[in-house]
Amino acid sequence: MKTVYVGLSGGVDSSVSALLLKQQGYRVVGVYMKNWSRDLPGFECPWKQDYQDAKRVAVQLGVDFEMFDFESEYKHKVVDYMIAEYKVGHTPNPDVMCNQEIKFKLFYDLAKNKGADLIATGHYARTKNGLLYTGLDSNKDQSYFLYRVTSEALKNTIFPLGEMLKPDVKKLAAQHNLITANKKESMGICFVGKVGIKEFLLQYVKPKIGKIIDQDGSEVGEHDGAIFYTIGQRHGLNVGGGLPYYIAGKNMAKNEIYVTTKLDDQRLWSDQLKLTLVHWIANKPKTGKLYDIRTRYRSPLVKCQLKGSSFDSVILQDPIKAVTAGQSAVIYDGDQVLGGGIVV
Image (cartoon, rainbow, N blue to C red):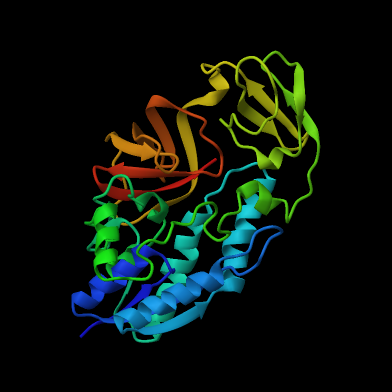
């Protein structure tokens, strides 16, 4: 009997993953990863409730349960990375870094050291022979966040929900009376529960008043720090009247935000991208072949070609709006995720 360590987050997806693995005959060990426990002003970190829910699910299923404390590593590898990126004007994706550094590195390594044959998580994605594929449920597919996982980790990973639809997952949870069956999904940053990114960043950086300048060079308002805003954003600017403004650029040194009312403003559109920290899971792309690219979670796929010795130059078939430095650009070949990189 093979032993699989499954990440139990206290949510319905990971709970059903553990249920399915037990039904499939594995020896299942549920693991709650304690990544973040700090409360913020006005917001209580839900980790204790999540931990208790994960533990209750393990008891319901009759499986072993452990907690892995990764809080210090998480702060260093995910939180500090995210704050540093925002400080230079980028828009990072902490979920991508969490998967790369925590779930499929620290969790994977520790589970293997404790005797696991395999690990599992509740991601909506599929893996086969060390390759990564999109989840069957296109509305829930989370392969975008997994593109930096190594082929070795994927060879030893099970995604029990990869072939399932979300409504069927919830239905299965209800049928087995899992205590997480009707639990609401957590929103916001992966480790801060209900706290938005601005509220989180305010714990680490001070507001700094700066100018908002429109496409004609006129000052149209003030903001409380360029760090809090991202390209393409149109809400939260507090610039009243007339047409909506979109953020078209930022100058971190001057602490200025540049906005436009014109949706066809060239500063909002990109027809080519440069990537850094490029990661290919197994097979490198081929020169001249058309692939699909996604530059943010749930954004539409766009056809592209990859060039350069590291395939770090992307030529887009159609321009993409509001591409921002720090975001992840993920490359797909049909339903297979080849890898990707960070937008420069």
